[in-house]
Image 1 (cartoon, rainbow, N blue to C red):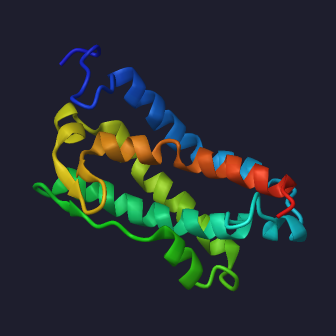
Image 2 (cartoon, one colour):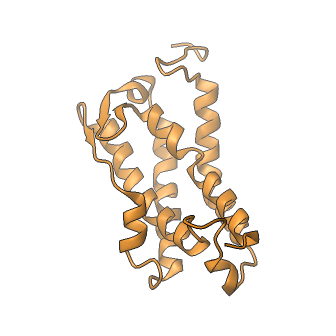
Amino acid sequence: MSDEWASAEGMTVEERNGLITMYGEGYAEVLEALDGITGDEWERREAPGEWNAREIVHHLGDSEMNATSRLRMLIAEIEPVIQSYDQDRWTARLYTDKRPLDASMIAFKAARDATLPILQLMTDQEWQAPGHHTAAGPMTAETWLKWYGPHAHDHADQIRRARIGTA
């Protein structure tokens, strides 16, 4: 297929490659957002009900490990069912106030490092293979990339806002 080919979801190869690049830069973006963070800033929230930086770091570790499995299922399984989960419940229940932050950052980085080469090797057919997400409905690897390409950047921005927040 030509580089100008656009998927049924409307993503061009250039758009896909841009999201892959963004995905590859996500860990560094979060590190930059955390640079120089103080003890008080780890607990600061952008607004009531929003996550603090500590909770975001744990979410990134948990979410990215889950995301890598989702992508692998979309590539390797025939019409896989991708299970949704309640990210707020995970944040509330998985000891985000007591777990080591370093372990979650290592998990986040490892998930990204192990997945980036797969993203760079995928075929057009693999990008379009159908799956089904239990909450969002039809899902392909392109859907996955639309979610996870900017995921770390979005949370890095959330960390930056929370560090100056007053909630």
